[in-house]
Length: 530
Ligand code: XMP
Image 1 (cartoon, protein in one colour):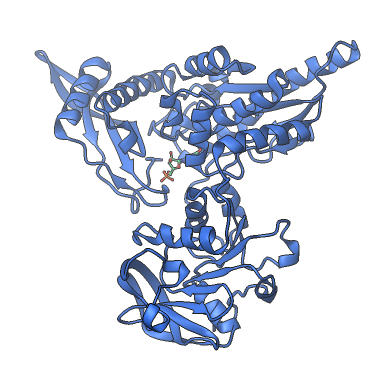
Image 2 (tube, helix red, strand yellow):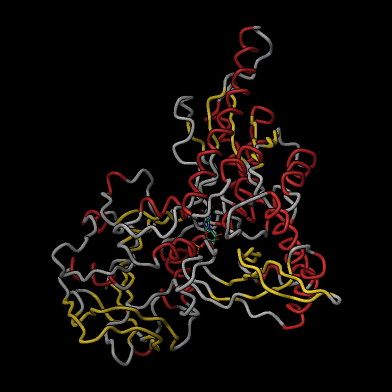
């Protein structure tokens, strides 16, 4: 395992990602972590970048004990300045922030038989990198030598003379540093000597064993499934581990996509054999949403109603379990656990070294659920990134179209219907959305788009059909490309695809006579309209 100490850079999680892409397990921890609190023995430590300057009064510093551990250390950007600062080098403020591409010249070391340092071995004489820093070194600490430099940064990369301690000014973890992933590979594989044993095949075996140990021979686990990748993969993994002692619950909230509840039932229950109950609570949800236009209120109502319905269903399962126990039947035990499909980015979000960031929208998740039942949480995906979950899904025989599916928000179509939510409005949007997605899939564009969906606008416009005037609603289409959904750009469709989609929607969906395409990026817009 590689320990990554997070000093709050926006790229910290990418370092973790790159290590994992080399099949080496890496874990991100706040920079303030004391070594004695780290439960594993790291094979190497990486110090991330940071928005701070080492000289700031409140700037964060690493536990000096890391230098005594004897394992290789790599400081990136602030991480370099941090280790230089701790080892008595000199860091100075630049007049301007250096931000953008740079060419690093890789130094040849050692006279006639000059060679490059192990960190850059085989990477050529120079490489393009991405810089983003305010401060830089003006003198290296004693016992360090230069292994790379740029036109403006004479100490862009340093190595200790005798110990495996490295610092680099640039960011190898971002894709703008095309060979950066290799630099990280040199460090973790060649210098730290990590084995490449982080694979999803190994993960399944280990996780199934771990779940069995945690759950013991009796006791049931319940969990919500939504039809999305994460909950489906988590459910299938639980099923592999404990079979029918896992109960999946799908709540049909009336604002799902077309035929979604039915499809999830067929796939999860019929094809994958997962013990699933689908609860049709659409009447309850739609009645509570009646007349509501405010997006945050819609989210709140759906979140709360979801909890009510899920709790009621969990209580039914628990009642059956209690009855079986009383009768002394070959019982599977009581309901003791709640499955959550938490992913590593959520975990990072909660452990990262960051100030509070503003809430733009309250995304609903199954937070403090089922307090009264005192269920313990089980989170089999909490170490995984999204693409790791996808590979896991493929290995667990989950059908490819589901594994690659775009994300779908918890409040569903309710936040894509811009006025009040009614059954009739839901039906219109479901129909339009299904045509849109079907055509995107047919054109082979689905996997190039991060998220695509239709939105139903609460306005009417005039049109003409045959000889008659129509006065009907408008559909807006949205498709975005994004890395992380924090920023997003609208997707450029070939015009003939948009033409076909528009023509099908206006012809086939009763109540729609106009289709528009949303060409707003995030920011200033958001991905969803509400
Ligand atoms: P925004 O609209 O915030 O969307 O740019 C970014 C991503 O978050 C999804 N999203 C939600 N997901 N509950 C969710 O589970 C929500 O309330 C919610 N709102 C937005 C959105 O679909 C996009 O993927």
